[in-house]
Amino acid sequence: MPQSWPEPVAYRDRGGLVACDERRSYAAAGGGAPRRTARESPRTNNHDARDEGEITDLTSTGPSDNATTQDDSVPTAQYSERAHNAFVRSASGGRVLSALMLPDFMLAAPAGFGVLTTTGRRTGKPRRKCIRAIRRGDKVYIVMLGPALTGDPEAVSAWLWNIRANPSVTVRIRGGAFTGVARELEEPPEREQAREAYCETVHAFDYAMCLFHRRGRPTRAKIQQMTRHWFDAGIPLAVDLMA
Picture (tube, rainbow, N blue to C red):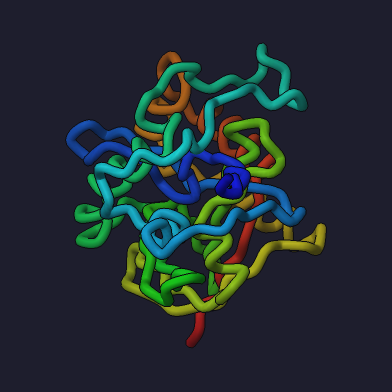
């Protein structure tokens, strides 16, 4: 009888921005997980693109990448996301939205957002992901959102696995494309600095992202509450830009 391999932990492919095109003005930001080692199941080469975060396969039907569940550490009265959103509750939906967003972001990303390019850990091919990216000096702060959106501490997005295998990345943001080295933030002082930059900064496109994630009229306070939850429950990273 053939051996049955366990499925990897599902996440919603939210490692970066997963959103409709700008005509819909919907967006979602970056995918996440904690630093504990997540189980990976053996895969054939046919799955390499999906495993590494490829977003050009619009017909792939992988496992549901992150059903939205409320984080127990945040009371429902204080923070909640939309319970039903087909585009962000599955891997295929996330890839479709990212693919729709990518052409516009490659031409001119909105302020506070950009395209992160990693190297596929299995194939060595470039993998691009739209993502919320806040620059401060020679650093760009990003967050992997998996646990913040799913409540699953084992959820790790493909682009973070790629960074752990090869931290050299490219970030295309307002002002051009920059090469750099990505790393997970460990020290409390640096995390606090990154949190202030990531959570207190609000740009115009954040209002569309808030509308996509939360019910009701987007406000600056709701956006900041949302990004604080993402930062605290997700995995924050810094990209040290090279001169």
